Length: 331
Image 1 (cartoon, rainbow, N blue to C red):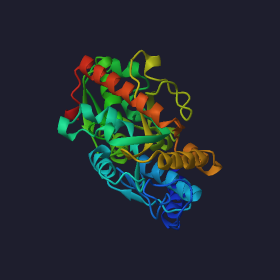
Image 2 (cartoon, rainbow, N blue to C red):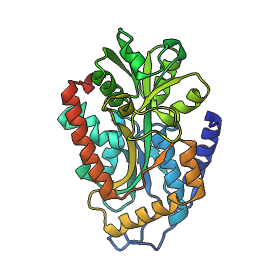
Image 3 (cartoon, one colour):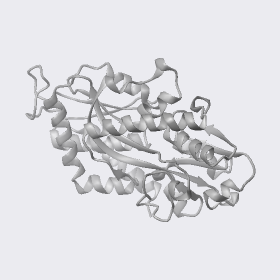
């Protein structure tokens, strides 16, 4: 069984190695201005606090890049606005590959449906280098609720409260679409991340919550939480007995996935160097073990494929939000 202690111990080691790697030059590729790449430390922003999925994934990739390229890739946490603050740092940086970030799909495909036009983070400000992994959502409830399936929710005949990991997130959208398409009266209770949402459902402060599988699985396995649905295109490897929303008759497919970005206009040889080092990292036993420990599904596709998926999801989500009259800006 995966435990929080094992997870934190493993990832602490990843973080320590990543942050202590020596900053030396590598002869692979150039930055486009005559310098070798990477040239000294490469700042790697993450739009979340330490310890969450985005942070842990960034640190695992940072460790791999350090090993492959012989330079330091320190992770800089700048949380806020579902990743928009960190994204802004990368968008405004010099396009030389010295400032990079693994970013969340929700920032580009879901958050625009919840914020004003001037707050939208534009994908065109970045070059997408390489896909990383998918982090699935699961709807959970406490045993005291008596809910075992989505059909039980439909038959509850009362307003259901649900915790989410914030406004404009995949957690909010997956839960919101589930209740709207099931014609169930429900009220969102947004929290600032997965940990407080998990605490709320464990404490029966909300009836249900949509959170990432890696954050919920320990409590599911121990019987402290009952999983009602996952929202990926197929069942999740780590929760094989839990049906998808589509299997339960609801057209809800939402997943978080992440990908490496650099400022728009970064030279191709720099992007190729980063992508090749990431692909080499993905093949290591250490990184593959990290994915399993954190219940992550590899989504190691090309940057072009990531962009195509983002554009498809952005259109699909916008259509569903309009169809069901969801107001994501209200929580």
